[in-house]
Image (cartoon, rainbow, N blue to C red):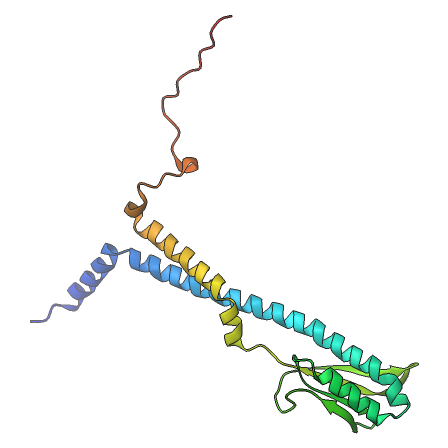
Length: 195
């Protein structure tokens, strides 16, 4: 025979009242997930900022180095310059183009792959000569998580310890922390002996 709906509802409510640790565990699981997401996003933004500085610097160096070669229309020198810059492992591809958007020289280890593009104008004595483009490899999310594994594990251990400490305080009764100990109720007065 089935129980009435209100009886079943009441028993479910009593079950939740008997086990308040469930809500605490869910709270700490959500807290850990938020903390892990913030850790990974923070590492990702730091890498992007560092890559932004490196990419802008490389593009400006390429533009500065190719300016005189562009003015002299030295295509061989531009090709050698592009090959030398392209040997850097972080550079996927690079291009040197003139004012008419014609490709003058290119290089890089993986020109077919996509990444973050950085551009710098090629100028000599304020005369525009073209543009230098450098494409850098972007870090994958999985690599960032792998590099942050120690921090994520440490955060997980701290969250697990807090759940155990708050949810099952009887496990930690023997641990004494002096700063958390109650003050003695009967403090003995200090008696100074007469001289």
